[in-house]
Image (cartoon, rainbow, N blue to C red; front, side):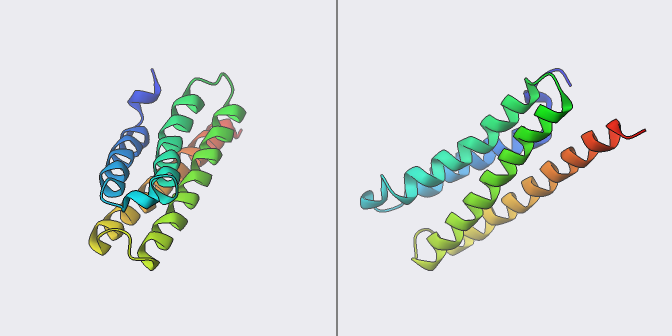
Length: 121
């Protein structure tokens, strides 16, 4: 791997962040410092932790940041559920983003497993 930009999961996380920004731009203005800020920060965190993981020198550190990204996926998933429960956002858009999160989670887990397997004798 040359850089984090070579990772398909990083590319998917960038697209996810763009979709979250689009979704939250339609939220009520009184959510600007609530759900909007939380969801945006969380989506950016996924891609950012992937970038940071790729810059690490050891597999252990790489995996640690992948796990942080997985935590942000779970956090964003929870925020999407809450957004749906309080009628923020189009339900079909929320479902589509949730499907993207599922795919990103699978990709992250696959990457963690691949790195762990490459260390096994």
